[in-house]
Length: 282
Image 1 (cartoon, helix red, strand yellow):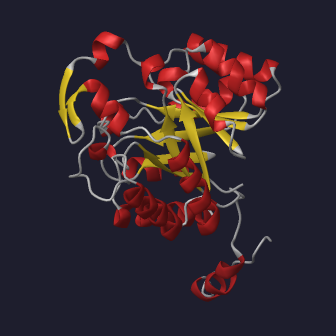
Image 2: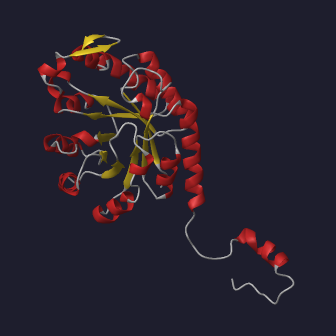
Image 3: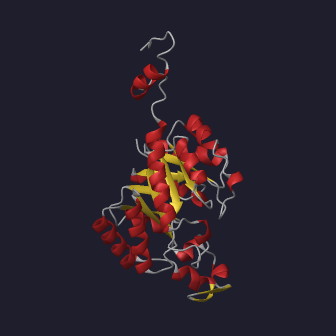
């Protein structure tokens, strides 16, 4: 099965539908399988005192203005839905509260996503699991008990899922990646395991692909110089195109692991071993 590659737009659209369409185009051009967003109900996710706090942004001087400036509503998501259908790419989103998950239910989406921050939100996990859609569950900031509870909820609901190994730092240092956790998660929970990366560069993602991940998620951006907390941990268009192309090559290169003389080696072996008593055992 091919690695399911997700271009995480998240909030890198900066509240601008034109930027959003350009980012969708980047994902389509690179050959990604899906684009992903984040959906929040501002007054449920953030405390009033926090929202009243000061924060300079392109939308004003308060935290509320910044959060609302980054949040899309129904009209914007209808356009996202239309544009993705027109471009032939799937989209879905990670909800950060129950109202947002209900909001996403207005669209005929094939997948759900549990963000790392939400893996401990059991009511949300149950609501998502009850939908029965294949769900990507990120494991950043989580211990074994947190992951076990999430897996138990999805298995009790008979909802298909896969875990996504993740380190929730932005950007992540390469030495913190702990990619060996991918195999540990796969063996312990007997499920597919993907990788959600926040590193600068592509090497760690290439290594994850070689470890047999089922999915790969990376944030994308038009430019890391743009406003936003996720931009520095994102991949620009040229890099994302290189990432998808290399991952597909890695998939083909992994092979089936069978030991033996490749059919393309036979004539070469006969030529290079012609001077010694040798006969193929195949």
